[in-house]
Length: 374
Length: 222
Image (cartoon, rainbow over all chains, first blue to last red; front, side, top):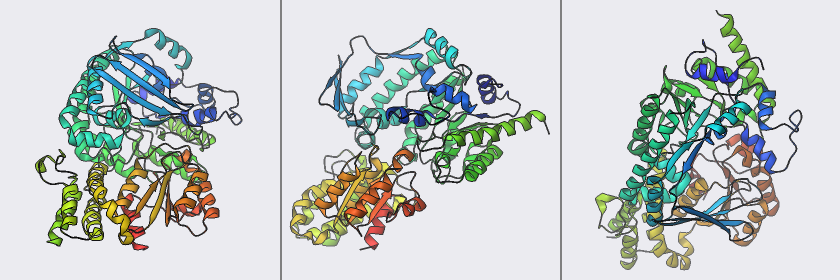
């Protein structure tokens, strides 16, 4: 590969790329779905691993899972996590702590690699109290050996990048309770919820100390923000203050900070400039999302980056390839050089990987033009 | 009297006040919620149909209007639906005897391979609040299971949900399976990646941007 994609990645986000942009599509879902179904990859990718496919596509990879594994959550030594099979498909996880127990039940299905949650980890105030205790007693560790191993394996594909665990409301929605129970907890038990949020903030502060001492300079808040569930009321009350505070602490160590907003975002876009973020990832324009590219450009202003920007549906054959190309060119026109071009938020397993090459060629032409000068 | 108590019930539903003991909303702490007001209305001789339509449905419609204007979001809808369900628990036994208040049955489910349920649940709550009987098949539902439910429940409408572009691929075959099972039965599809063009292409009866728009459409369609 003739371009050092890791260096270009760092240079783009830290404003040292002389106007060039980066093409960094996420293809994990396309790859993993096939592996789950036991399918052979189509030619010319047969036999390749994920990273070989990226290299074949001549594009950068956003290496979250890889470098995330270098930050280890360490629970209180008294915490015991036990699992047992309830049936052929159902598994119960019991988390025993000095503050009480939590249980979760998941069902494996033949159609998806993601299990169905039958019982969330937190479904009562007693379980929320346990979750609070666990966060109060959680620490974080950095694994240098693992970092070096990943850098040796995939360091050519992108700069070291990680995403933090979700903040307050999104933690309850996505990780702990599910949206419905979490909404009732938020509005009916605000004091207990506030105690959990405080503990979570403090736990994440300890993680930020570890991140700030590490060589990982590109940090994402893996929030999966969706305005439908994270309403402006909840966003302003809980999410925005925590986001600003985290971003400020990471900026103090010179990190590039973005957040993942992959649902409807129109009601929240006016607050983008108040988040303290350097960029927002995965905002999905129409026809898949609820905003136009022009609305996103206006909200991000001249200071913030867009990461991604091309709706995933344009990689499916339901849309002509010309539509995809026109969209990619419009995203570049509106957002370069503050742009890490990608797919909002991943190519699906029904997508055509050859279309990744089409966008790659557009980006190569754009960067060549930047290099050649006016 | 009837009018006042039904307005009060609609207010409780729209404001998410489920029961007297409910801590939400804090400014109505200690006041009767939808459950108590529903019981009071029935005790005062208001017909179950009026309680449903002029109380619960009216309250949910008010939330729907705020939702359409961008003034309410899913949390407010869930809180209102909780209040609606608290009242409906008292109303259900009466409605079973007086089916006049019901619009018919809707079968809902998230298609095979997809485990997302929030959108489908919201549709269920809103349709329940609009006077429909809802049979929710859950998530990761195969085309065959939908067909079985159609045979067993005799719905007037079926709603299929898919959140992912990957699982959206299951919508077409499921619609096709249901067309064979029950020709003429309207099958609607919904989910973030679903567009009207896609719905038309796979032979679905339509798609709507949110649960309230779907409920309005079904109401207008009679």
